Length: 451
Image (cartoon, rainbow, N blue to C red; front, side, top):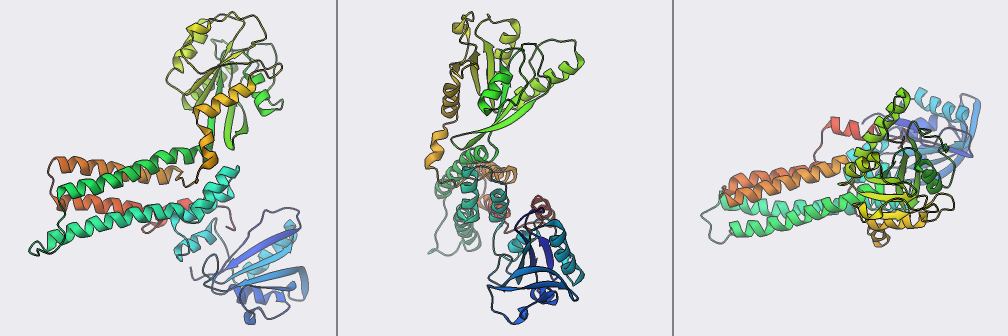
């Protein structure tokens, strides 16, 4: 990290302002080479200076330059931000001059990577930065801010402190058995302390499901045979005519997607091709996709026609969805009822029609109730989320369960101490106390350039 990096930190395009960010030991010196105004190498930290960016004698742009000296910066290095007029040509020209005068083009996420490597933030906080950038709802933003402020990290550090306390006591008992005045770790003591750690891990993992719900939303597949009103329901929920609606069976041949918010939680809606036996090759592909989405979706809205008795395809779909989160939607309730409601296996049944929106609000209420979405209104949003975080937590919990088994089988404390230290190490990897370059490269490659 001895070199100085630069990158455009705002989206390219026509706008009032673009920002080019520079970080590194020569950041101020390099910018000063192309700046006409005061001497930037002699100004105070955290000050803003008016002037011009020049290429030899040619004025490139009128700018404001912010000087931030280490260590009180985002990267804990000297950081300079050049505020120039928005526009692709001007912004790129300023960046080009920086690169010609000694900067290197920053890699995706490299500014945040330097913040991590220089100890300003830990790995959970770094991931929260990207979550904040990608937030699409207010609840996602709140969860990311909590991570950025270190609340999740404190939970992990507390667990590690509890573990190191147990480990150190066991090691003293093993190394100095002759001392009578030291605290002796008994099997019962270890069981009690381990139970507390297990309970905390289980709570964090359970709440992580809520974190993923906030972050990823609810993947919702609208399923049913042709002409039961799937596309009409999608359009009603989205409040726009996104899917083509006709009375011709098989109109929808591929998935159509859209998002809505219910109490601030994303509902990722997918309208699928009507499921039926067909000889049409294109429609067959659509039906195959529909069946695949039926398996992958978190929530199934299974549409049935109020005006027709259940047929074999309806019964087949009811059987396929019986062990999933499913709401049976009886559409066309403005027509004569010919379906036998008593034969339906689920208690989650909502009657609607898509002509006058009758029952649409009831459907939304059923979704709120199924996922208990009201609980997020008073939530502290201190949730873990993402594959990496949850995988590490589950790995720790599995080791705890192994230790419990070992205690029942009278495994010696020195063997169990190794398992406890393994948990402590894994939790360290979670917050970035231990890491490898490959992990960092993968994580920060998902960031945008300039962050």
